[in-house]
Image (cartoon, rainbow over all chains, first blue to last red; front, side):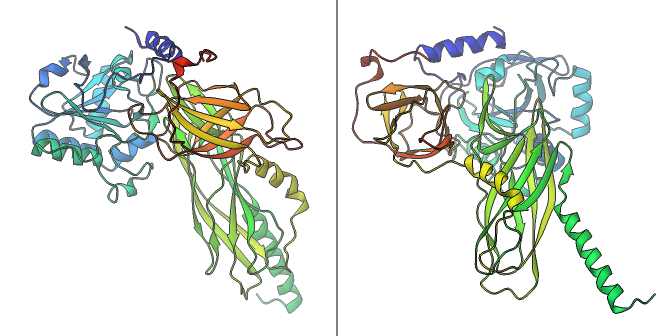
Length: 202
Length: 298
């Protein structure tokens, strides 16, 4: 189903009073399954990573909030740290063709190299299907899925919604806390926060 | 080179005049011009006065309200004031709902006046005072650009009470008219009905008008689904507005707090379109929505 067909369904659902979020994803429930192609041409299904914690990171390299975390190497450091501990880190771009952040795969590979991305892969979601299923609102917007496939965190990277990289060290790092908890087999301290950033360019 | 005293005085006055012009000019950074403007031509020690942070945004850019909605960030100010001066919070005008499906954001466009009260110390022994600030903003259209400016304003000390600058009176009146007003006789209550929040609005007894449409902007970012339709209609002695909670499974908060913007004024003889709402949730359970045959689908 194309993204453009999802919205009328959402509106119809609201009009009927069947109130539900446009996202199917819910913290505490199984994370929506998906299969997407990465910038190298390889297909990845969520089910492929069963048994490992998975991070989904919505991104758009031209968004100032994304630049905040990549410019300061914060995102790359998180990626490297948790991939080294056995997690899978999937950056996802849901920018539609013609919108900011939509690039051909080879341009993406150049950007990822320039950023020094340490993500497992960057998945291309140009029709926004997976973004809408997860309710991805902003770049960045992060989701943490535990090894059993349950969505355990949905929200912001940290608690300081600025574009200033100087604010990173003093912020409460929600995603790092969630991953530390998941890797330790402990409950995630804060499971849902309001994501901050630029809107996803569906 | 040496000048005589009259020449020095003349030069000094020129330099001061030039400096005044310099601080009065807006600071432009891309599509945004930022400026600090005082309502009065001078200030009196110990007497609070109002300044505006004026952000002029080129179309089609928008900045954000304090609750930006689904994405975005409100402008912020970091004051650098002389010792003894304090500044109140920025007062925001009511926003405009900007729908970019599937998202809804609450934006500020065009000529944006953010007011702040400056409280000078009771004693000030210099001839003037300079208020400086760093202003940060995020503007978005199809994409987003952060920006920043250093602004400042120098005001002389004058007699109390400081007189409003007539040149700016209309602009400050317009800026105040866009701030949320006190309810002034309107009574608001909130309740939970099934999977909705309902804001009930009862006008003052002497209200003879009609508010054909209204839109609620919550202060809290996690209160309602910003992109969900809001259904406003007449009910009983007033109106009701249905809102979709951000998390329908969560218990309701203590109150629905925010700004209610009407399609027409809330009070006779007033142009104010926005009311400040702080409606506590009533404890009483009411029949679920399906029991109400009058309900229209949005």
